[in-house]
Figure 1 (cartoon, rainbow, N blue to C red):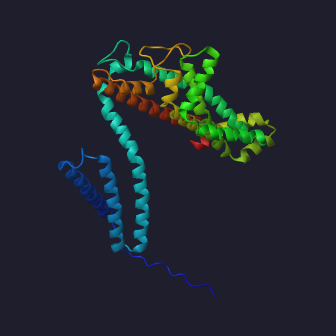
Figure 2: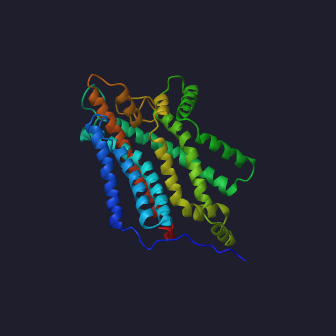
Figure 3: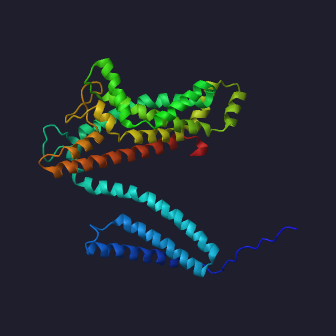
Length: 356
């Protein structure tokens, strides 16, 4: 005879949305009031908006749990507590991103003008100047690194998923995992040593930076593409083989088009991973205050190195250098955002009709 399972008692009463909004408002009012008093008393140096939002979220979770326990009962209160903790974790993860973007926007906005986008730092020692040379250098070096990395990464992933079964596949997987954790400065040192042996010591040029960045980019492309290819149902492959289609044509016409959205997203993630690297570019590319469109000759400027040098090597008018550094960081954020939006649009257009 099976034992009777008695469910926990539930209450027919429930908290309305109006009560929850009032609770959220009270929590925010208390949290912002506390930090306002601390700022006014001089205990806190400036109003900490991020901390106030976090405290208000915690207070809301606690107050909603107490109110739910009183009105709705233990089961509903536990459910609200779990939901509140998950939401709070999301807010905590989101706050650094919002703080970073807002800080870069506020500090970089004063120099986000036409001069910054149509002039370089040639012969500029104080106010004025811009980052056009750094923007061009970043786009060229990143594009060259993408051209090097994407074909190698995608074909490696295709081999691992569709063909690789023996020791070679296991060795490739192992080395890809190792390359994923390589520090960026090691990639820069490798590229510098390689080109110094071939072309002589003291070599500095843009394509060397592209090679260094491709070392960091290839493992990300391989891993993301490999996971996307594994998600393609085997039934699609088997149906293609049943019609007499060769394996290579099945991969080109069936597998890759099915996974193209995820592959493009992985490529864009890898670009976002490398576009802000500074250490390898400092070693192999260097820094220039003039325009240089040639990847194969002389030093080039890039936005990460531009931001670093503007902040680290301030002149007599320090504020002008700091403003340019913040604006360079803001432009770099805009470029990453634009690339991700383009990737989403392209992946949506190229995805199979049933997946759009």
